[in-house]
Image 1 (cartoon, one colour):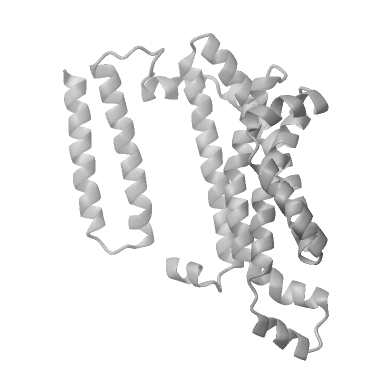
Image 2: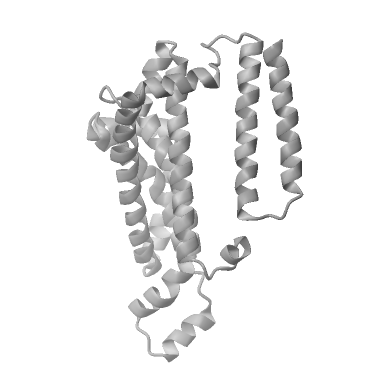
Length: 281
C-alpha cells in the first residue's frame, strides 16, 4: 500500500510543479525543466505501481531493476551499441542520406528521372521492413553490412522526397534575379536553391534518424552475429530477461533522442535565417 501512495504522491507533486512551471516565463531553463520533470514523474509512478501491485518482472520490471541491470551490463550494452548504432545505423544513415541528396539534385535537372524514379521511390518507401530485411540479409550476409543496407533503403526515399520538394522552394522571381546576375546553373544551385532547400532537407534528415535506428534493430531479428541490440532483445525475450530488454530499449531511446537533437542543433545553426528558427529563439 505504501508504494501505491508513493505513486499517487508522485503524480500530485509532479502535476503541481508542472502547473507552477507553466506559469513562469518560457525561458530555456523552464522549457527544459518541464519535460525532465514529467519524465521523472512517470518513472516514479511506474516504480510505485509495479512494486505496489507486485507486478511480475516478466511483465514489467521496475525502473530500479532496469537501472541495476543497465549498470551491471554496460560492457554488453556497449558492444551492442557499436554493432547496431555505429556500424549498422550510422553507416547506412550516411550512405542513404548522402546518396538521396545527390539523387535529388540529379532528379531536379532531369524530367525523365523525376517522372520515372519518384513513383518507384514512393512504391519502395511503402514496402514493409519485415519484407525487405530478410532479403537484404540474404544478399549482404548476417553481419552489419546487411543492416546498413536496410537502413539505406529506409532513409533514402524520405530524404529524397524532401530534398526534391525543397529544391522547388525558390520562387521564380528569385531564379530570375540570379539569371540577371549571369549566374550559372551550378552557382544558382549552391547560392540559392540548396540554401532554400535546407529546411526541407533537415526535415528529412530528422525523420531518417528514427528510421535508421528502427531499421538496424529490426533487421537484426532476421539474422545477426551474437551481438547487436536487435539480437539481444530477441534472445533476452526468449530467456524472459525483460530487464535486459528494457535496458536495450533505454539505450535505443537515448541514442534516438540524441541523434534527433543533434540534427536539430545543426539545422538551427544552418537555417538560422528561416522564420521557423527565429520563432523558437
